[in-house]
Image 1 (cartoon, each protein chain N blue to C red):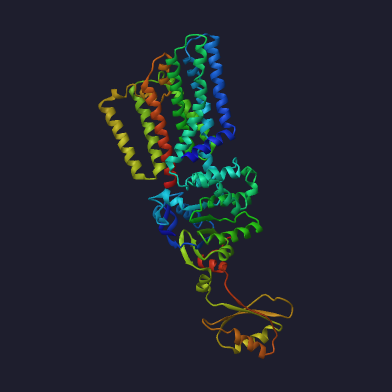
Image 2 (image 1 turned 180 degrees about the vertical axis):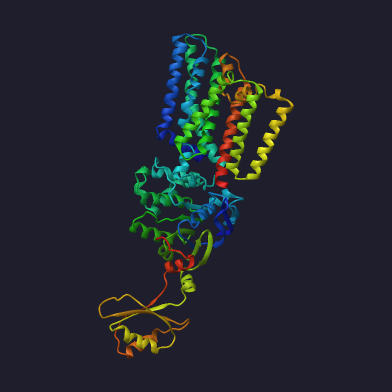
Length: 314
Length: 287
């Protein structure tokens, strides 16, 4: 379990992280979302004890990071944004060093290194110098390093940056599989990724917490009125005539024409009203052939823009 | 600590630096032993040892420039400082690895007096007390080099600053006999040093009040004592430079005297700079 209490990091008068509090339960994956420079890496560096906090506490599995750093650090495996590898070492040699550094007992070291190399799929690279590895493999070696000693808490800072699509999907699946035994914090500026992988999402901007909830709940809370997209083979006037006769409709937004002779629009009902069925019947009764009709749920991306008031960087 | 130590040793000898250091140091000892003891026929091994001390100027930064700056540059410090090892343990591991590499060279050289004694009378006490002082002087320089490498991300900057600092400690011995010793110049120099100190304190702490207090107190004390008793500043610069002159403490050994205070002095410098390195790292991460 990770408890972060009133965490503040100030550089002079600039607050990189401003009064951040949250808890991550055992076996949970928390997604850490924010635009570049929002304070994600700074927060992670404080949680892992790499830098100090100006104020506040980080408690890892009952150990306070600032009072008992060695015990707290023992519980954490950390993959920073740039994998912390030595280019002039071989993969196996590097993992051997990290295992010793992380105080894996000598008798377990060999099997533990084999285990993490298997998990991160780098066994066939174990004799290679790290400087000869591609970015994707370096990232995997960094991941293997974070898993050494089977720490309870695993912290991954933008783990999919610089990977190709195959590696990204593998990495996501792998992170999901970690949740069975580990508590995971994962940072990203890619909304889709967080949506796909995480149990809960913490959105921060300018070092402040914006919202902390499940991805579905965040969309639901911020979602507001959900639109219904309708495309029918007819013209604007016919559709407007039908819609104007209906109740519970707040606004109508004209959409781009999908093909010739088809009119498309998004219909926004009044709050709480479910007009899907009524809309279908009204259009059918008027003899307008509906080609497509679907609910438009706001994506996390739109939610993010709504919340932070700025364009997310993807 | 042991993990860091082993890694440093391995890195020194998988890269070229460890070999260059040992080769260079042993070659210098070989050349000077040949010149003084074999060719010129001096009985004392001390001449060879003291001649090599000058070359610490290049040898020390070769080993220390990468030590901490490279970790920071490659971001591997994020691994090392988030591992369950204390900062002191990490720095000590690194420092002991540096010392071990120097010790390897000294261990090889320590057989030379024995070999020489086959061909003539060698004063073993002088030879080994010299070699001991050489080793400790090296340890002191390595600690200074380690400290300077903790302050920067660039190997080159670390190396250059280390060379400048070691050069200063070498030249301090010569300079202290040449600089004027009257009190007015001493006061000016102290004033400049005080200003530098105040500026440094402001850069490190970003606290105007502390720096202002330091400024007022420093200059107040200086001007006050100068007005009341200017003669205390006589020869001050000579003394000041004397403190920094690491090599001047070496000369006694050359004349066959055993100076325990020099051993203590070198050892203290080494401890001081290892301590400062630990503080510099902690400071960097805690500010």
